[in-house]
Image 1 (cartoon, helix red, strand yellow):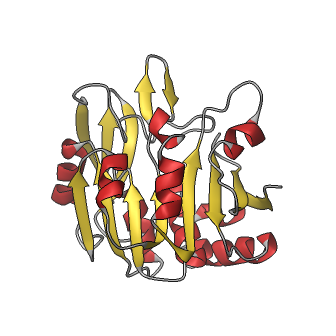
Image 2 (cartoon, rainbow, N blue to C red; image 1 turned 135 degrees about the vertical axis):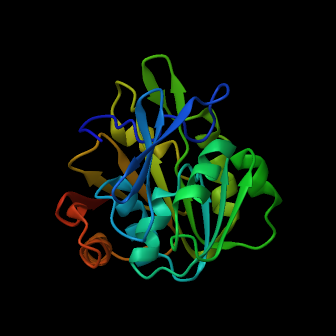
Image 3 (cartoon, rainbow, N blue to C red; image 1 turned 90 degrees about the vertical axis):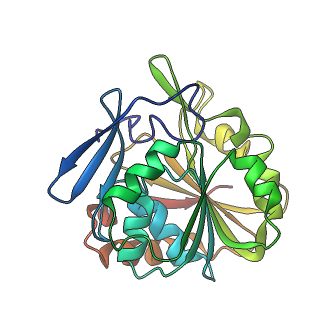
Length: 249
């Protein structure tokens, strides 16, 4: 995974056709590749990926108050390896359109799963059907297009409203945001906000992404950063010293 717009999500979320996936085994598990690009680092045992997946997991673990977690965009389960390593025993309800990625995870991953249910479905349709609210919702969808990677239109409408509707009052949403327009990042991020939400932004030194944290009761940014850093340090993730967090005004 390289600096810049990472290929880590090249077949995630809403692929425009059947994904061409290949599994390449590694000493720690396997890498899931799509046309040569890294989709996920699937680990046999819980542990750090040293990537933005660690930071996604740390934000959910450190800032969400309860165990019920929705993951929109499961891919190969890299998020889950980091979450379980941090001690997150969450009941994870995940959705993804790629059945092949889910099957690759099942073949490789060992003790990373814990309480896990994965649905092969459209994220918005799946979330609409959920009857119980979540303590955390992690949104990590992407759409590969020729020569680039973009956020699917569903990320901007209707997912922000659906995510807010399906969060506990004290819940937190963690959204992976990328491919900003020329106008810049803040306007891009504010497209995902609803009235009454507090928002914080995680800047990643190694990736051209932002992680947007949304909730009605987010702690001050300094407290959020300290809690996320401690969660990352607890598993020895190199990302513990490779991010900064600020309030989105």
